[in-house]
Length: 175
Image 1 (cartoon, helix red, strand yellow):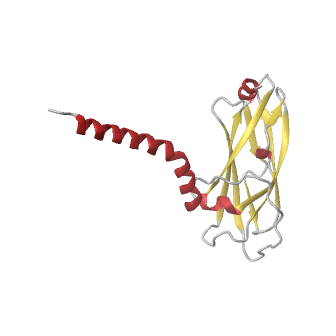
Image 2 (cartoon, one colour; image 1 turned 120 degrees about the vertical axis):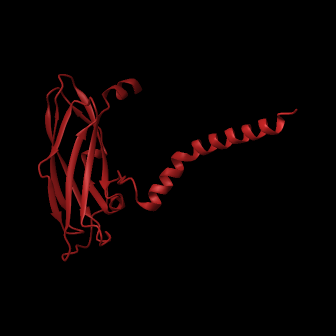
Image 3 (tube, helix red, strand yellow; image 1 turned 90 degrees about the vertical axis):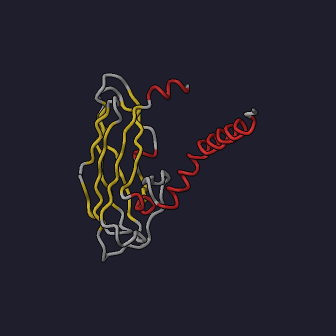
């Protein structure tokens, strides 16, 4: 009795599973781009808006939280703002290193609903760069943004959320 056909099928199934697992990340990224899911906004500085829709208002709220163990407190001065699509808006954030060591902070933004991510444009954001903070230091950061006039009509509220990470150890390890 030969097991060669069964062995051949099992090897092909294993190879297929490996190829599928290897392709998951790029497939997921394509899926998110097509559907607007995941709310990953661009981390590139946007160009200034040239048109303002005076007839529409969008509520934009802000949340921040630190990754488990990250010694930072970050909070916007305003919980939410009302913006007209195309109009520039500035919001200030306060960040504090609550540890007794110098640290480097990196903020990673996400947008909800996910389909609104491509319509939220940031001109200035503390998420563009790594932010070194001395022990106990408190600083203010500026977020300058606008909501695109092409935002779908069914989106009336947007939440911009930042997760703050302590990347101090990664920087030391890479140097």
